[in-house]
Length: 131
Image (cartoon, rainbow, N blue to C red):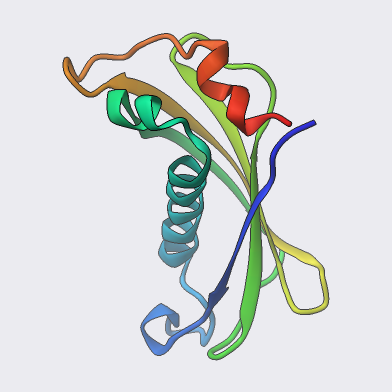
């Protein structure tokens, strides 16, 4: 069972593009915000002090959008075991009706803070994210 983290976002004027809805770059920022907030909320203090994460890949499916003033609820979780220095994170954004309108699979690589080098993700680092 995976520990799911949720957070809500509301479209503000600076998020809206020329088509009148949330810009793709904003969705990417919200995906990254979700991942960072999840790490900060759940990771063990020693792990937060020793490691940081960088994105190596975003794969995003857009099935809808929201307009100015509308909100979405994002849910994120770790999918499957780590692979070497990388971990796969899923993020789904649901509109007010509960429909998934944006879905992402993002690959993150873990780096050692002291050396700045990639390090293998040990099971105990991901353990707090799995309930």
